[in-house]
Amino acid sequence: MPRVNRGPRNSVTDRPGRLKLWLRRTARLLRPPVLAGLAAFVCLVALAVVVHRATSGPALEAMRARFGQATANLGLRVEDVVVEGRANTPEPLLRAAIGVKRGDPTLGFSVGQARERIQRLSWVEHATVERRLPGRIIVQLHERRPFAIWQNQGRFVLIDRAGAVVTNSNLADFRSLPLVVGPGAPEAAAPLVDALTSRPDLMGRVTAAVRVGERRWNLLLKSGLTVMLPEGHEAVALDRLAALDRDHKLLDRPLQFVDLRLPDRAAFRAKPDAVPAPAKDSRATPAHKST
Image 1: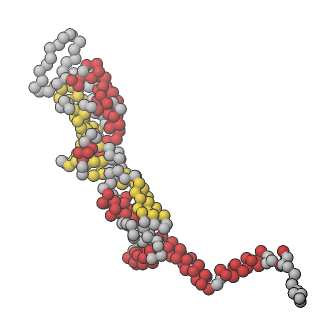
Image 2: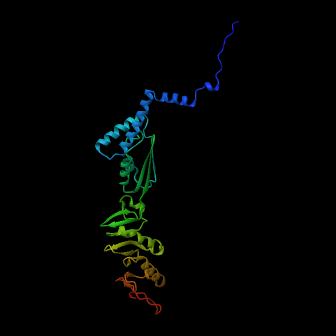
Image 3: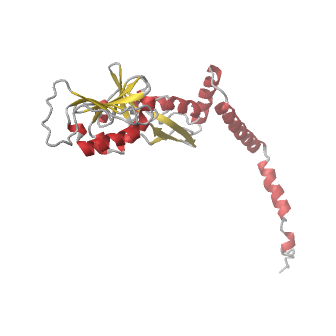
């Protein structure tokens, strides 16, 4: 039998080196079809950045729509719109402001413009809109907190702590909030409401707070009594009022008004039809007094 001469077995030194392997792989990546795909991808990303950072305009909107449709054909469609923080913002108005729904192109709308539309809703103080590829849109709302009801010229609206008007709808849902009345009341209400809230015995007697001359407040009590507060010193005057009521049951008397505008004295006026109660001792406080 003839002998078959076999060549020497491959040794470690016969294997391609790391450099050769890298060059082979790079050569495969540099083939025309792969290069074309990479170039298209880079151009797509660059175009996305340009389209979505550029300012608004009819031409840009048309470009954004075409670009969004092109990417949607590649699978970039909205699959989910998540809204966080909504409590009072009407859902139909919010959906319209977002301007995108399931199935729409993920890259076919402006995140910045959507945020601006949402923040124009009266309930929304601040909003963020985030796009997470391939198809998730996340909207986070920071809503205005109801603070008081404002009455002015026969109209009632809900306001927040800063005095911004929130809504004039469904006000019955907020009937437990304080009522402030008159021009300038919304912007000045917070310190007074805070002072009353920290004095619940007085707060429970108040029907409304009326802004006078856009400078100071009158309190209208459930008994019909008007309490005239000084400008800028509401908390001190409320402490005086609480002390007078504690010591003399002032708020249970048939009074028309209590004037606390001066820091060193208080003036009272009885109701015109009030019948003075018989004095039980010489220390009883008269119905009309200045101190």
